[in-house]
Image 1 (cartoon, chains in turn yellow, orange):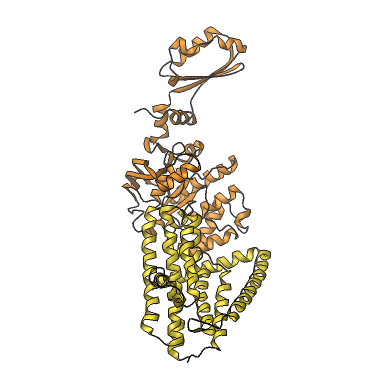
Image 2 (cartoon, rainbow over the protein chains, first blue to last red):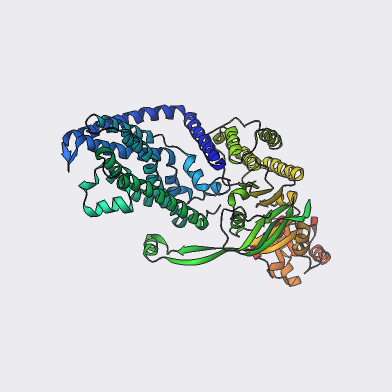
Length: 266
Length: 341
């Protein structure tokens, strides 16, 4: 209990530090916000054009497709917002020996890396995801009972951890190879498959994105339950299970990697 | 200083790295991508030594000798291939988190400060990370601000600090949680004489006041001479010397330097020490620049008196002097020649 309280405290302190850091360069911050809003606006416009051309797809109505698309952006955005620093592990922190710093501090290294930075750009995905989900609701024929609403809210932390787990495992490879940014990228990009109903893909792609790099679990399967009330045990249980397995694997690979870490000459 | 109490015990510490061997050029790189050839490099080879509580140990060796690798094993950054190190009864790689609370680390080439924020922010975050209680934090900051003279720049963003200021700030950061052992890896690198002097004085002060054990690596031997009584020297991953500076001088310090001004450059050419005394290059070197000549020789091979009488008998000189080689000179010779066992 004490450890968890301490983790929250440290997380909060790092967050505040990050916000201060962003405010330190005011001009850049303001321009960043303006650019960010423009990009989000154009993204929404682009999606609206695409979706207005699709009446339905493989038995999915346009509102259902928008819901799945929107839901997939929410965990992606949350992970991107809080845990973006893993990319730096893959690209340069390990390679340049800057990982030394984490090892000399009395904080769990993975936790330290995860909470050290935030990525404001991620709010774009998050906001867009929420906008899409909300705007799809009017066109859906769903009875929003408590079970559905609570299920949808509770599943979000777990599907977020699917993203974080996959990034942790692939980032930790850098401890052996010095650089694994492209490995993270390759696996991470599979999340593009999560934006649409999995049934539109061939059988083997479906198997990959369900059981191997399980991004289908981040949106399509929870949506099966939320939209159609199908099999909550599998459709919600699998994402929970997968997130726990991936995160545990991530922690194990990471800890093993620490022993292989070679630093860099100074 | 209480050297009876061992703070650090290093026992047959060893680190091997696997290195991929590549042929030069793009072709070599592509080849190694498909058929990598690796070879084992022994960076640190079974090194043992001890450091007493409150001692300042100078840890020296030429570039690439394995100093940083040893320091990184002692600080828990690298996992040793074999052997062990125990610091205050703890093993750095087991229970790392409780271990690092007892040590402070400064790598002169890196910084742990928050680059974009005022310096003070770094300390307030480190306070949380190391769980320093509020009242001892205040006292500690007052102490460090005074000893390391931080007050002039503690509100400036770290990116605006000069190298000397940044180094002092980094040392303060490593001491915030009152560590029992302080590892300083080249803390005076790239600094001017005055700043170096300030930093040495601060280290000395903290060592004396708090009995902090210090391991100091440096290429500036003045750091060592001023701060530590004892040095450990390593070369190519092997320990080559372990003892006091006085004993180093005794053991290797029979080198003398004779310098004089000859009447003319031609006159100096008459002298041929090597032939006259039958000296080998190990024992003897000469540097002549116009009329001024410097002769370094091993006084065990040729007594100083004979050297002088030979020189004075051959030519007439002005301003002749003979002095002991300083530690810098001894180390230079050791680095160049290695140590014969």
